[in-house]
Image 1 (tube, rainbow, N blue to C red):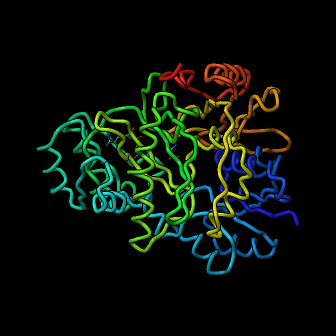
Image 2 (cartoon, helix red, strand yellow):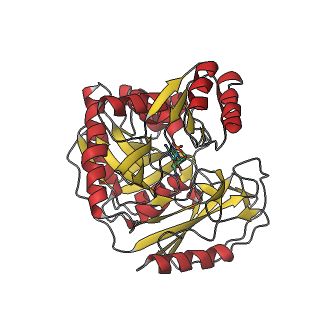
Length: 418
Ligand code: AMP
Ligand code: GLY
């Protein structure tokens, strides 16, 4: 019997997940809620939003969905996996309790402190005066992180006391992200890399590394974004650092979560930094990264339905095998992103060589047959090649041939390795 799968989310990450599922010989029908114009070519899009948990559950039952795969953190943190499991439905994604590893910086930092996981020193504050007193007397730059989910915008790295005071006021007095605490962290330096692992309780199965580009503009300038481009693998991170990260970071964190009664099932994403003292944790996410997924999953040769099933059912994990071909992708975003931007601009896509270039949709919709921009990040163009340079050139050539009046991109993706 061919399997029916429901993917929740509507960005580039979900497009890459749907793309990987569509390569599985076991998977027949794929639904995606809400999906986007690109996903619609591979899956049937369902007009349900990620937080319509009761409706999504009813949909999965009514359409005899064999497995649901959750892309974004927000429904996970709201307990979608708990609700599906309670209804006897198979789902890939952590419980709300386990999703706290991303949803609460304070939870993640305290867990790391209890289990001696290498990360930046920190203190947590809920009172503005106490936070400001501590920051004013400390070193600069300093890192200020809102405790809760903030769509990648909750981290501020002030260079001066005045900037720090303003950021603390915004977060603790004006509650710009809602009522919550602030984590004040030591500033670390070094290249960052994304280490995503499939985790089922104590079983931690690593994926190949990738590297994101968080800043909006070339030369790593401008505001932090959700990510402007990525590539895989990351040759500047040696195997010994990957081994260290697996043995001293990812595996102990998975074990800590089991020991503390919130076992993790899903993708545990380590946002790590290679510091002079070895790899340290910058953040954890409770899901696949975006745009990292768009460069990692195209390299996965193992049937992803088997991988998701093993984690969802707690059965043995298949061994993962990876293509030696490498990937690099460029995000095309709406002008103004990550600030305010306009939507609805028509897009004309060039033809691409099948297999060598993939165009993942991050924020698009189709209106009366016309493809239009519908989000901050709009497209992710991924090239595949024998070398990162080849993947870069293939992707960039396609990017340059995308016609749309309101998009920008960073042409320096991969500068650390090319
Ligand atoms: P986060 O959302 O926690 O990943 O933070 C966003 C970005 O801020 C990271 O990708 C880093 O570039 C930067 N950042 C966060 N924490 C630190 C830190 N302790 N030291 C230096 N940079 C940091
Ligand atoms: N690319 C960073 C993230 O997915 O959070």
